[in-house]
Length: 95
Image (tube, rainbow, N blue to C red; front, top):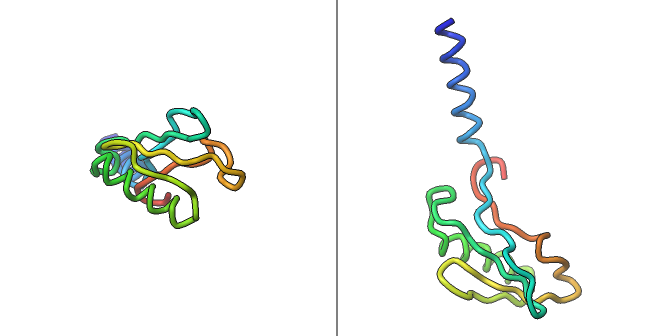
């Protein structure tokens, strides 16, 4: 029984470590812009770190995005951008 309990704890720990956390997600669709909020401590990193990474990824794809605060950013809704909730930033293994 002890071996089975230890095995369950091991697999639960592996699942948590290999999980994929949402670091930035849509928070508002307002006046032709999509606003995103990034979480502090997702994958042990700051919200501003995730904001910068997400902003870089979106800008590299040619989207008109800009930082709005410590852990927020916004992007202009253009034809090729699509909907606000179709974009997010994740971190962790197997993302």
